[in-house]
Image 1 (cartoon, helix red, strand yellow):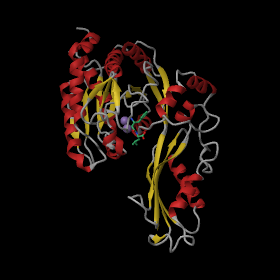
Image 2 (cartoon, protein in one colour; image 1 turned 135 degrees about the vertical axis):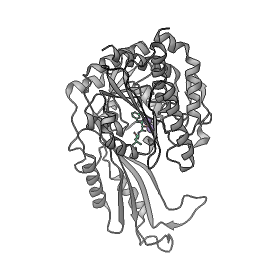
Image 3 (tube, rainbow, N blue to C red; image 1 turned 60 degrees about the vertical axis):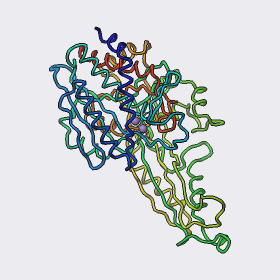
Image 4 (spheres, rainbow, N blue to C red; image 1 turned 180 degrees about the horizontal axis):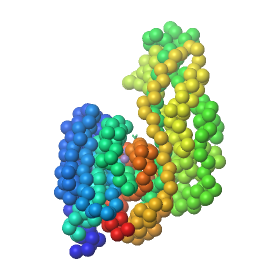
Length: 454
Ligand code: BES
Ligand code: MN
Ligand code: MN
């Protein structure tokens, strides 16, 4: 049977196996799921072995194991490193899911469940593609190295050690990743840029302890007020980040790239619908795709302090807290930005409070040319999978590993994403379009097959 017929004939099997994978709650952030995370690593390792990837190992780390396997039985053919993650985001709040997060369920042509789009569904479609290639041609037509980690959603810390200690082992002609999205349904996409992410936490400290707001209010600093005033000053009325120097190193888009990005079939109306807010807001002078993909941001991610329980409590809290982050674009330097942000916050802070400033993580942006011949193969394979020519896009999310690999090996990084922007990644009712999942298997199998014929 030829490759595409074989893949089409196995739809039920693709899905029932994906269900198995999705049912294991591999939540990397929650200690209670540690055994599930380990079980998922074993599932991936076992599945890779059955797909013909030899020498698969489960590598223990300080936190969650990573799975590495390789099949190097195609001398003279290209070697690709496929990277993905088997861990998922916490499913909470559970009451907002239409069907339980770890019981996969199909509605309206979509498969619902935590990890369907980010990233178990996309990892699985690569495994099925490899399997299909081996079943139809007896062996894998190219050399593959597969690295699937279990810590992506919590910062990929163990991965750095592993990469640094195994550079020769991981070397490949290209990195292939499916952990991104298509621009829109029916628009296969190749992503050539991601934003970087740096994450911060601050604590504002006022009085030495909580105080009665009647007895003390009016004469003492309130850290919550100070915190909110401070954050209100971090953007100006045009939604520019008001940290001096923040934009100094931002690369200006070339005329041709700006034109190409703004000519993409991006529908502002669909975007507004997905967002669901009464109106949008963003940095003045830039289109939505430029704001999302090519401009840096500073976002408040969480804020707490004082009393938030039932009823009223008249208290002036001693401390206030916030988590916030910056998305970075070329050529911003994460360490420099962190210094600028801290300096500015300390400058805005009134004398009546002190502040602890922590940088929890930093991550560089990534943008790379897509001229290598492998991109042509990928482009054609996406057409085989989806019946349409692919577009080249950038995205606003971050995948630290891509930047790291690009900086280390300078090899082409080919990001073929099969998610969609409205598929609720990290949120309740996460799902993947079945058309994209099946189209993805076909596209990836044809991509790997096509590389063998180069
Ligand atoms: N798959 C996403 C990254 C992504 C999403 C890239 C959409 C492009 C489009 C990944 O799992 C993720 O969530 N990354 C985090 C960063 C990470 C360090 C926790 C992110 O972007 O917030
Ligand atoms: Mn992901
Ligand atoms: Mn994610």
